[in-house]
Amino acid sequence: KGGDEVMCGRYYFDGETYTLIKSIVQDNQYEYDEGERDFFPSQDIPVIIVKNEHLTLVPLKWGYTMKQNSSLVINARCETLLEKRMFAADAKTHRCIVPAKGFYEWDSHKNKISFEPKQHAILLMAGIYRETQNEVTIITTKANQTMQGIHSRMPLVIPQSDLHKWLYDNQYLESFLSLVPDELNIISGQIQQSLFD
Figure 1 (cartoon, rainbow, N blue to C red):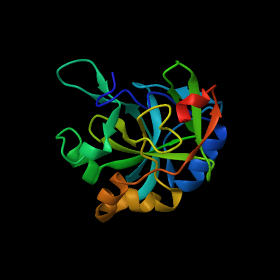
Figure 2 (figure 1 turned 90 degrees about the horizontal axis):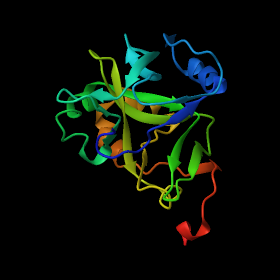
Figure 3 (figure 1 turned 60 degrees about the horizontal axis):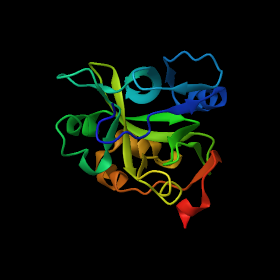
Figure 4 (figure 1 turned 30 degrees about the vertical axis):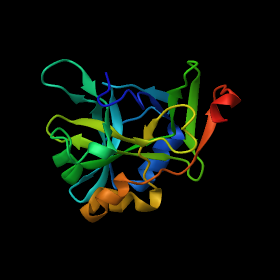
């Protein structure tokens, strides 16, 4: 399950993340119990969309449903986002942000590693959504320097200062899709030094 690649298949969120997101949006339709939680594909996750011209936090199911089978497309590659029929229209009209405290990835030795932003308290992962089905998928890009020794892909992370440009303005879309995300902090997990040599 995953789409173009099995990447960014789990992330985490906590009460501080929720409080910060509530201060960014104008309308909140997502109920959260304040504890730290991991989010998985097929769950309803908190997503920032533009609704009635307001930034609104809504619950959407993580994963685009495939008509021909029961699998979910949880990621979309930025390199082919505008070419694939499944994604192209939503990329132009239904962009969103999936906020997180951080995300997990597993290295080749099956070590679980947590990644969080260096500059901000929240991670803003780029996504697109299907309005009629209430489904969302997270956009991925090539790994930056932090990720390269662990995985070839990572979420496309939008700088907080560019939040409105990503959500509202199509003229910046292609430049965002070629963006190299800022370096991340590795919070936990044992990584063998040889991976970086």
